[in-house]
Amino acid sequence: MANKVKAVLIGGTGYGGAEILRRLLFHPNVEVIRITSVDNIGKKVGDVHLNLAGLSDLTFQQLAPSEAVAGADVTFLAMPHKTTAQVVMEILSSGTRIVDLSGDFRLRDPAAYAKYYGVPHPAPQHLTDGTFVYGMPELNREAIRKARYVASPGCFATTIALGVMPLAKGGKLSGAIHTVAATGSSGSGANPQITTHHPLRASNLRTYKPLEHQHIPEILQTLRNAGAAQDLSLEFVPVSAPLPRGIFATSFVDVPASTTQEELDALWKQTYGKEPFIRIIGGGRQPEVVGVSGSNYVEVGFTLGPVTGDTRRVVCFSTLDNLVKGGAGQAIQSFNVMMGFDERTTLAEPGLWP
Image: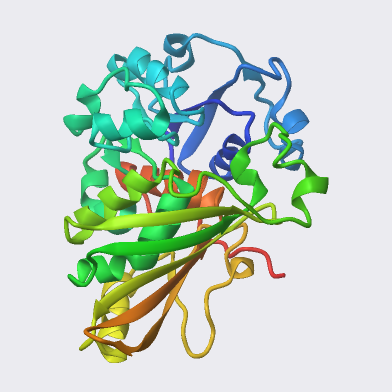
């Protein structure tokens, strides 16, 4: 490709930034022209992300947002929420496309943002006016094709929503969803904390933010947009698990007693049969983290329980890599769709086995 897309990464020293670079440095249609950060200034990419040693001469720079995006066709934002919104406001008029990995522009309800992120949104008009398209290709592919600004989904939100989305699209999702989801330590970021320090994490399980996680309104918004009933609710307990990468979600949903295995098999196939990164797991096996770790793939499956009164319980399983399909990979997938590239570009390789 003669004229490659010029890409900038703002916030490049975290695990998400590392994963974006691991993919974009090998993207045949992209030239990464600049990487900015607030730490490790002047260091080469490979001095911070050791797996990228020798693959790029770029160094981390500290620049004002307007300087950082100069000459960029697309800007990837890999910064914490709250910080990101301020940067976005400074570059919206620059002409660069934006793919934002933070939670700052995913929600449409400013009140929900204030409740779950702890501060009022600095630009609530951009939540309600559709400036940002929600970057889940399995739900919004056509809108992403036309977008200039994409809000890439959260890791738990992607895992849980994709796990039960066939029920939403089939008109069978209403009332309460109960979900427990275990996540790897990389989701807590590159800077060590007491809850992510290896001696305390490696042989431990613990919950955090039970029933209060910030992805709850995002999941409900996504599922309602997919066709779920408006009375939908979610009780979600996240679990900190002793693995570096991966999320495994188990969601419990009640459906009408008349629902059959064949009906649900058809819903899952109709929803995901043509999706390049979704694997429907069955035949006696259930999704596993090891099947997707290091990749952009998602494994989904379900078990249909017996009739109890006028309902049947469906247990939905879903798993993905929190840094790839739950983060950088999905952002690049949406970027590919937005730019008219093959959606699988630089994402098609499988994960590691074992």
